[in-house]
Every structure is written in structure tokens, then in C-alpha cells.
Image 1 (cartoon, rainbow, N blue to C red):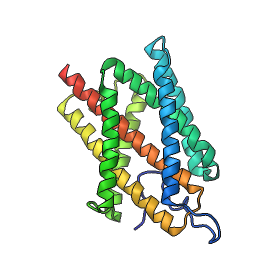
Image 2: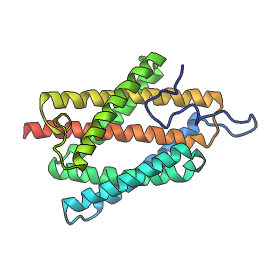
Image 3: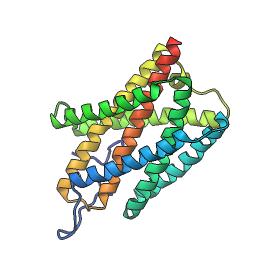
Image 4: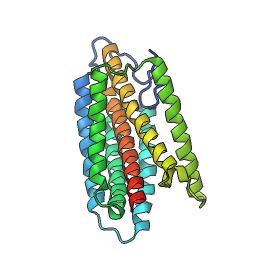
Length: 248
């Protein structure tokens, strides 16, 4: 199975290259430990952002943009310089946590209770996908990986167009921000695509651990899982906000 085409750029065969036989290799337990560390740092960053006093909405939006640029830089540095992942991944997790906390603060301000629902939903999706993977209910074949890759690229393109429109002061795409049946349906589809990416993540990590990827790649694997979990949380939060806006 060729996972060079996995939809998560972190999980690339060229990054997880095999190592010398005498060197420490990547293990599932190691990935789990690094993932818990990254998740803890993300939650710490989110808690910090959540409890900060904000004078205006524009202030928090400005900080979200600033931290988004910073985490994007760290993300690409990690991809192209995996040797320093033990430094960049924790920094990325903290920065991404601040973004999540700030976005959640805004969501909670407009729709009380939505953040807890999104968090519970995210961990529920993770548990469900782990169960599906362990039971091999859905087998992540190469064809399956290609379909998810194409779907993910399509979603990313739509978000990119929306971001460019926002930067140039144009109206954002209604499919992303409206509360129509079509917009809600689109969010549901994106949530499913994000969830299915977890299956590819699990398969790639297991496969690379068996192939003897170097131990330092445990941080890269943890980053890949963190990126997917954040995506799922944001999509579920967005969907819940649309549903609440429609009912108001």
C-alpha cells in the first residue's frame, strides 16, 4: 500500500525512512506518549487563551491570525526539518492550543455550551475511529487512501478560496458560514472526511513502526495525529454553531 499520497502532509514515506538496525526505532507506545505530551501542551495553550481578558473581538481575532501564521511556519519547518521535531512540535502544540482556545472563547460567547459538545464529539470520533481501525471494519486500502486524499484536497481548496476572499474584504462563501441545509450538509461531509483521515493516520503509524522508522519520528507521528484531531474539533464546532444559529 502506497501511503505517499496520504492526505496529511506529515505522514510521508520520505520522512519516515528506515534507520540502522542498531538505532532506536519508532514504536506505537512511543507515539502514544508523544501524542499525550502534545495534547497536554495544546490543552494548556487553550486554557491560557480561554482565560485571557480581551478588550474587543478584533483583539482576539488579531491574535488568532498572528498565532496562525506562527503555527503554520512551525508546521512546515517540522515537515522539512524533522530532526528538530522534538522542539517544534511542542511549540506548535502550544500555539495551536492558543488558537483553539481563542476560537472556542468566541464560539462560547455566541453559543453557550457549544464548546463542551464539540470537545466531547471530538474524543468520541477518535474513539470510534480507533475501534473501527482495530476491528478492521473499514480497511484503509490504497484506493481508499486516494479517495480521502482527493476529498481532503478539495476541502482545503474551498477553505483557501474562502480565506483569500476574507483577506480582500469580499463576502465569505455561504457554504462555509451559512446555516442552510446545503451548508450544514457540507459541514457534515467535511466532518466525515476529517474522521476518516484518522484511519489513514493509524495505518501509517503502525506500518512505519513495523518498517523500523527512527525513534525521532514519534514526534512527527504525534504532530500528524494532533493536526487531524484539531481539524475534527474545528469542524464539529463549526457544525454545531451552524445548527444553533439555525435554531435561534
